[in-house]
Amino acid sequence: MIRTVRFLAPWLATAAVLALAPLVFRSDFALTTMSLIAINVIFALSFNILLGQTGLLSFGHAVYYGLGGFVAIHALNAAVDANLGLPLPVFVLAGALGGLGFGLLFGLVVSRRGGLVFSMITLGIGELVASSSFILRSFFGGEEGIVTNRTGAAAFFGYKFGLQIQMYYLAAAWCFLVIVAVYALTRTPLGRVWNAARENVQRVEFIGYKPETLRLYACCFAALFAGVAGGLSAVNFELMTSEQLASQESTLVLLMAYIGGTGHFFGPILGAVLVTYLQLRLSDLTDIWQLYFGVLFIGVVLLAPGGIAGWIAMHVEAWRRGELARLAPSYALAAPAIAVAMVGAVLLIELTHRLFAHAMGESTLIQFGPLTLDAASPLPWAAGFALGFGGGYAVRRVWPRVQEAWGASGPAAKGSAA
Image 1 (tube, rainbow, N blue to C red):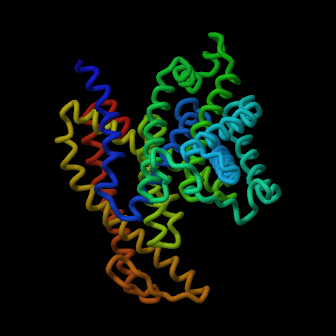
Image 2: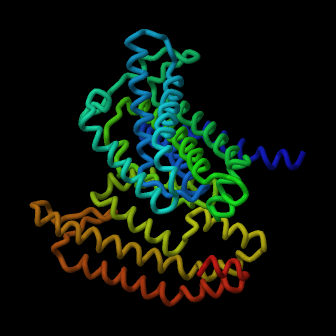
Image 3: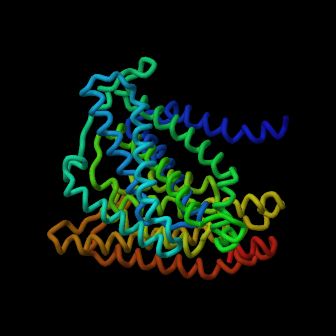
């Protein structure tokens, strides 16, 4: 009984969070953000089937997301024109089947090789499909894309999904189903063999499994769930464009999975939540929000290779050993220094960007929190250098104490902190 409760508790908690979130965050922006987060969680989980489970780095995963979305939006328009009376969730399934179909088609090519060759082939296919979107205008719609109206579909238990909150619950329901499905898939014999192939493909081949077949299955399942995300995106935004299958979308899902942590099941979920929220908020605050994503990615690679999930798991293990109290004093010293260094670095980046923008005819004034600063004045620059370099020096001085605290917490923790 206790084991059953422990197993069901995370799933019930996840379902409760998805169901109750609109009761806490009620604004239109919040509903739109949460809908996009649910879609990106599915997208990131699908990508992690390749990278985290099978050890295959794809640079063209957005192809299945985009093509699944185009299949879904064309199916919706055709069904509405023919008055077939199909409800909206059916067209998300159409996106899933579209992703699966293209996953099988392209998978027959990309699965022939692993490693770097696999990555290069996926990059080539991604660029091929993206460039074809401007040629096959009847399917991709050219630069304008394909539009639809989701309220034209038949009602589903009385709901037409015209309101954003209804669309959120549709995306949340699919998100929960995909989370459960992907988790179950990773616990199957196929998922275990994927893990084995990730660690040592020669041994897997020695015991009788064909690496090409395993890679093909991984491509198909990853494309299937990416198609679900693409279908949800199509009905949510009522628009599909070529940008949704371009390299920028593939880079975004790579950031979500890696920043969250590819070595843990919940890592891509955390990464999708964080990256989606930052993408929407930072784009309102600064024109160079993509630069900060690059800095965040570099920081994770250098300081937390296991991603956010790996960092959390490391501290959970320390908590289980009762050693968090030993880490708290060093963290209390390092946190303010890190915060000061980050504020200084952001200020210098924004001032530099504003000077370059001024060369193009824009104003030199920037809004930095509650302050309005002039990039042409030396005072903001002096403050930026003082905070950045002063905070960096403080971090350098206190960081050995953090490493010493982790060293005293055990060899495993010491290795993780280093």
